[in-house]
Length: 75
Image (tube, helix red, strand yellow):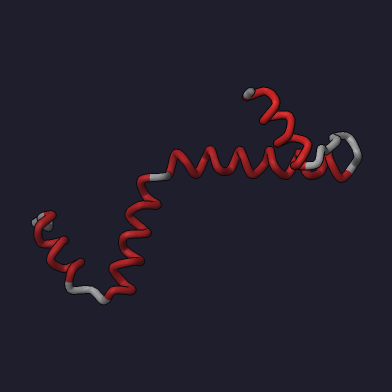
C-alpha cells in the first residue's frame, strides 16, 4: 500500500530540525539533477581555462580595468 503525501509530511514534521534540513536538501538536490550535468560541464570548462592560463595561453586583465571598461560602455 503506497504511503500518501499527507503521511509522509506528518512523518517528516516529526523529524528533528537537523533531519528535516537534510531531507529538504536531499529533495532539492533531486530536482536539480539536470543542473548537475551543467555544473559538471562548467567545472570542466573552468579547469581547462585555468590550465590554459597557467600555460600562458590565456591572458588576464585586472578587474578594475574590466569594470572601468564596462562603466564606459554603459554611459
